[in-house]
Length: 66
Image (tube, rainbow, N blue to C red; front, side):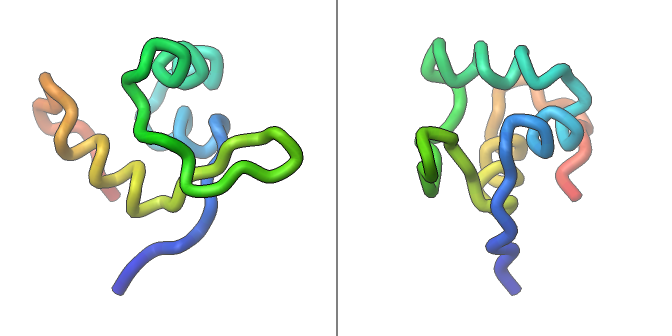
């Protein structure tokens, strides 16, 4: 089953346990996947997009993927 909920910087930050500004920095430096949707200038990603990204990140030693 796919998870098509849209996550903002805030939800991504909570998922990977960092501050939203850290996630913004990841995007600025090209470390975050391209957004699945941009609405009113705000980027959003599907939860599955982020879970896949987390699983593939270098140094992902046991980080949460749920």
